[in-house]
Image (tube, rainbow over all chains, first blue to last red; front, top):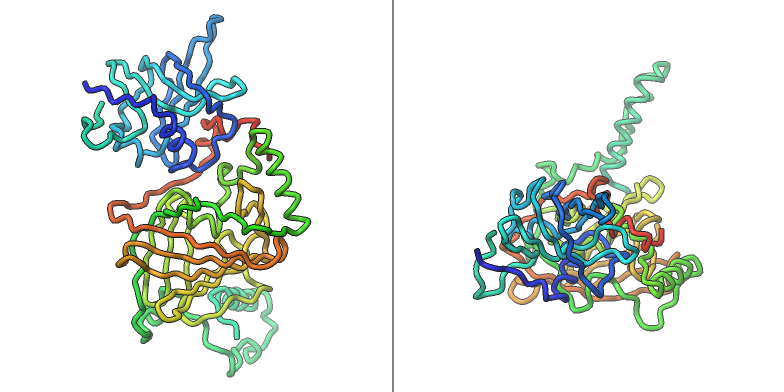
Length: 134
Length: 271
C-alpha cells in the first residue's frame, strides 16, 4: 500500500483543522507541536461538519485516557482516501495530533496509522501522487 | 403599505380566534372591509411566480464558494468607532486574543453565523434564482436566506420576527442586484466574531451583487450600518467563485458533535 503521509506539512494541517470546513475556532490547541498516541478505537463518527475519532490510550498508570480527535468533514476526507469504514471500533491505531495545551486528552487530528500499516491524513494527494486509498 | 406573508398568517390566526372565542360578534363584523388589500401571495405561489417581469440581467443559480483575499470575516475600516456597548465586547475579545483564548465562540456552540458571515463561511452557498426571488442556502447548518423580489416591502418592524439572516428585499439596478436586509436578532450575532464586534437589532445590510468574469465569479459590495454598534457605514467588497463540482449536504451542528470537539469544550473559550 502506498504511503500517503504528509504529516510534515504543519501549515496545511492547521489550515484544514482550524479554518477550512470547520465550524468553530481551534481554541486551546497547542499549535506548536504534535503528539503521537497509540491505542484502541472506541468510536469513529463519519459526519458533517466534523468527523471525529475516540481512542482509548493507556495512561501509563494502569488506566485509560479517552482521546477525542477532531477531524475535517467527509467532503475533505473522501479525496484524502477515507471511507466511513476506514476506522472501526477495536482497531489498534497510532494517531498524530495537535494536542490540547492544557493537557486534556484530545486535539486536532493530523494523521493515522491503520492496523494494516497504511497511513492517512486529511489531505488529498497532490497531482502526481498515488490515489489516496487505504 | 405593508404586504407580507406574516400579516397574511396573522390575519388568518385572527379569523380563527374570532370564530372560536367571539361568537357574539355579528357576521357583518367578521367580514373583511371592502377596501382591505388582497393578501400577499406566498413567494412560491404559482400566481406570484407567473406574474410578468423583465428578464433579469443574470441568474445566480449555482453553487458558490467565498474566495476573498480579505478572509471570511468583515474587518472594520481604519479609524472605526464603536459604541460603548460594542466597545465592551471588542475590548474583551482583544484581551482574550492576547491570552491565547477565543472570545464568544458562538458559531462553534451551534449559534447561526447570521448575515453577513453566513455568506462567507468556509462552506459553499447554493443559490436558486426564481422569477420573483432567490433562495440562498449556506451548507454549514443549512442556513437559508430568501431574497424577496416580488415587489413587497419590508415587514412592519412592530410585527417582524428578528432572525440571524434578517429579512431580505431585492431589486435590480441595471446590471446589479441590490439586496436590502434588516430585522436581525440582537444577541449571539457578530459582524466579526474574532474581534468581538457584535451585530444588533439595528443592523442594516445592503449588498450590491455583480456577476463578473463571464459568470464564474461574484462580487458583492457590503454596506453595513448599525448605530447600536458603530458609527457610520462600513463598506467592504467580497468575492465568490462558482464551484460546479460541488453539491451541498445536510450539515447540522449537534450537541453530540460538540461533546467530541475538545476545542469547543476547552477552557480557552471565553464565554
